[in-house]
Image (cartoon, rainbow, N blue to C red; front, side, top):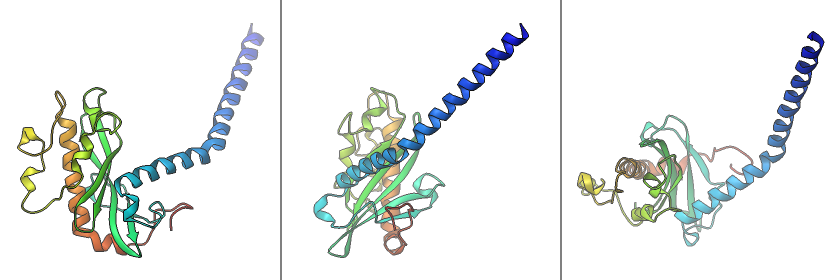
Length: 212
């Protein structure tokens, strides 16, 4: 009886070790492929929020890290500096809306040199399907409503959802989600406008082989 138990225990241990090793090996072998896929997805988003005619540099390489609570997190967030003919043309900055209905929502906002929003996208979220997930471009075009907008001293009151007296639509049964995104986009635009020269002067320090 004891021998059978020991034998079964050894078998299970060997199986567990083999399974763990297989998972680790799979992760090791696919790590570069996953990183490459993530880079391609990010490049696609960057070229959506900063149209190709507005830059002739590699946006992925022109990356600098920013740490400021105004971006909704204490973690360093990447900013991508677009240039055209050697002159800065736009900045795309990632930020966090910490007050989504189901948690943090990561956004990226691109702003032209004159302060006009070129584009905004939601990079990740956990919002409820059929309700809050309308912030995702794959679900609705709501996020496109920021394009062409500016944040100025004169239009502060308009940077809210309509339920709060602003210009942006909320979703039926899901006001918290768009409210969080509107607030985050406004904060991000404010940050870029107030710190543009500092962002342009920072070293390209996102790390990795593709940044520098």
